[in-house]
Length: 420
Image (cartoon, rainbow, N blue to C red; front, side):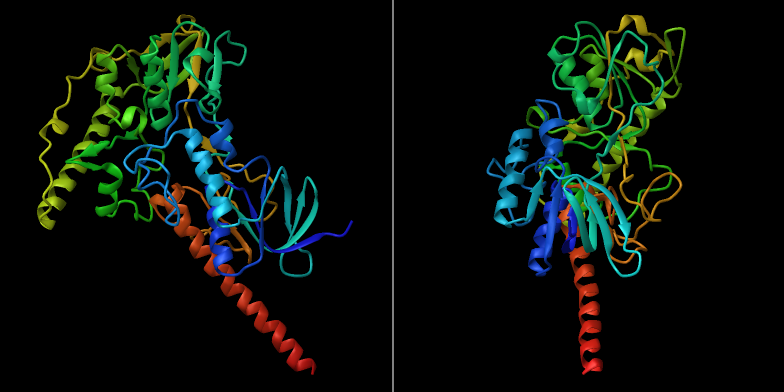
């Protein structure tokens, strides 16, 4: 069977792949988007039932399409899926679902790539890997697989009823871990939350959402993380109308807080020291952001209401002041590992990766002419993995693809002239 040929192949039809399609269409670049399942599949099958977007609808969207919900609200999971489908229709994205990409290699003697898929071979001048930041769930090998405790990654968690009755340990205090722990506590479950380094912004301050504050303060445009914060997660929530994640308040409501999980010996989970320092560091980030917001409001003469309540912290809970250093795993029936994701580009057989598997690129452009990454955290700036951020990164890559096409078109024209 002859290979199918396309100018540009986009792998993935989530927010990154769809944004890429819009900009390629605007640049008049012929392209095809392949999706192994359905549009926005991870929102459909790898998110819990009650999940809502962590940013308000006015902010976390594509610039060319608004959500059909209250702008200050936080769209629910199914609303996000519907939004993505409607956006794909709006831009007439050439999406082919149910096709998985199995292998990408360089053409042996000419520009472009051979792309082996579940439905045959495709040859493309350019390939954009737009598979996003949530590729392979990571579960640290701490608790043995043979343990009677039910263990699942946050991507497999659905609701409190899906877990067996009994106490739950949630490991990871980023947005997913904090929200799942809170949901379980509200459902009447006994919950222990293992907390690591985190950034804890206010949900709102002085009448403005934290997304707005990060925007006007220039923090979405940061080009790289500060040294030492590479593994620091952000803990924020749009649940229940949007609330600040407050670990002190979790504890006051009955949740047990512990430090980072370390190792298991004889069914005992040992906990690393430093919980109080971790909580304090998150508080410092929170207070520093309030200080920056106040300074900005004063400098710009903004008329915003004072918010002294935002600076009032509850007392440090007993489980932090006198930290627990070990947990009897026999006291728990389930563990939810909200421990993030790792990249999985095993299908890309090109020399583009560091020893730890991270892609090497500059703003998504790689050393392999015609191959690009899109949708990765910090691809060009802090906002790169968000819906609106990936849209701007996609515009940059579409420009790069157009520039390269112009060079090839010039070459082809010269060959015709020289052969005349």
